[in-house]
Length: 237
Image (cartoon, rainbow, N blue to C red; front, side, top):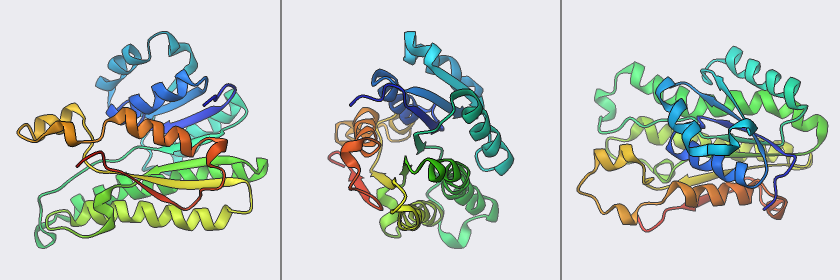
């Protein structure tokens, strides 16, 4: 797929999945605007994108805060004149806590980081896409968001919210040349997950690069007839 001349905004783009997705768009010719929050991820990210570094703009931003999101979106439009694709990757996981024992701050943290961030970024980008009558939004939900499981209440609710948000926006803009879809990974094969589950069979997990390929497809013109979908990307997990 060719994304030459396209501008892609990727939230949480310096993490394991974000780096893979950013790299895939860069190799396809896109200009990438990436938000991050963890300083230690910046140098490994730049090392991964290598000679495509000049085609990346990094913004440190808390995408659970509307002022930060609006700043990034406005700066991107000022610099590039357009945003063709929004990929909401920013998110996180807290598990192993029964609902009855879940602190309020953990509950809020999950919903803010996963659901509110996707809401705020979509809200900020949509007016621009609606004016152009063109655009693609891809959100990261999760298989865990399809049903409730013991110890995963906050995370499952947050990721379920991402999927419902995806469907709602897709229905609102389906006649405006904009598609909105979600990807639902299982366990992603990242260094952090390998460390946390060292005894698991990592070959069964889905690789970030495979998720990136699905996202690139959903953001392409080939997927123009797909909107409001939740695409399972489970590997063999």
